[in-house]
Length: 272
Image 1: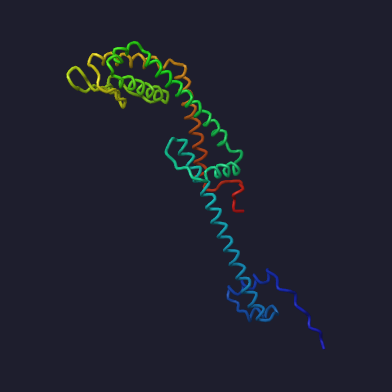
Image 2: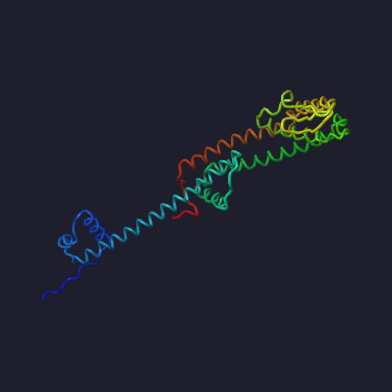
């Protein structure tokens, strides 16, 4: 009596071949007869191969969705960062610190980080120079002897209004804006006899004596003619100009991330 030889175990490649042939129209009995295996074995491994493929496809879908969400998070952070650089209102999420770290891990050599460091430094310079100028303006206006008749008359709103207007002019001109014009924006509206309600653009100065308007106009004119010659003004003007250049470079880099939709490199939060 001949001894039965044991067939080798069915491998993954064999199972996948049977599944492919079955899905192409070849029946399990035909595969059984062709390959010399029991039809039950063929059916069992076709089903096994199908289940393994479904598991693999499900894992692939989960991974694809996770990667898509991960890239979406990074692109969303790049968009929010770009909005903040432009000065627009942008919500800050609880994950932004982590996303900042993740984006840096993905793109450690990107010029974004150099530009961002420069941007932060310029923002500090702008804040320092603006505060210094604001203090200088307030100190000089409050001590200006030309305004003594107005202070003596109790028209305190004039001092605050002049200070607010000059601070606005100082920063606006340094940014390159036109600012307020005395001829157009110093508005006097009649009040009770001998008085007028005065404002300079947005800066309300309250009710003042008619004869004080010429003093106020002259004080504003004198300060506005001098402000642009201050060293602080020139330094602030340079800082704003540099900030504008850095902002454009940063936004270009961040736009590339957003529009590319796929971020190169890896980070500790990558799904893989």
